[in-house]
Image 1 (cartoon, rainbow, N blue to C red):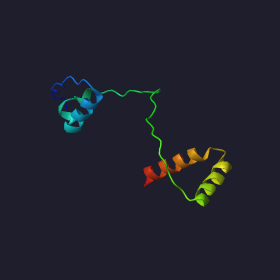
Image 2 (cartoon, helix red, strand yellow):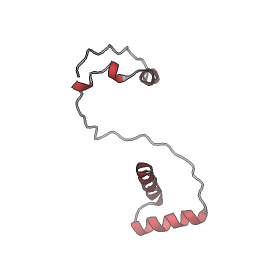
Image 3 (tube, rainbow, N blue to C red):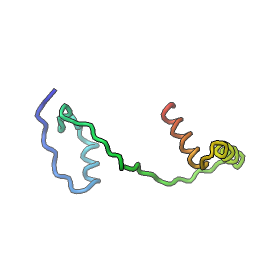
Image 4 (cartoon, rainbow, N blue to C red):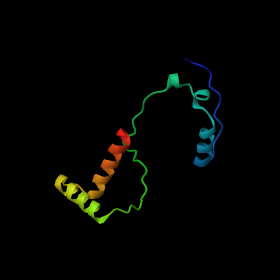
Length: 88
């Protein structure tokens, strides 16, 4: 379905753009029938550090499991969390 898109205003900051898109439906402003897939191979996901308190015995078990897989235990925790959030 091709329809005339309304114009998108000039947005000066990322915060302003974020507020705009939170309040507007893109289907009123963008002709998605003309959209093309793009690849962004060098785009790195944003990360943030967290503090996570675990019982010592649980952390020891995680370290043993990571050692068996020859991976850092932090990586194993991230992998397990990602699997649980995707499946759960």
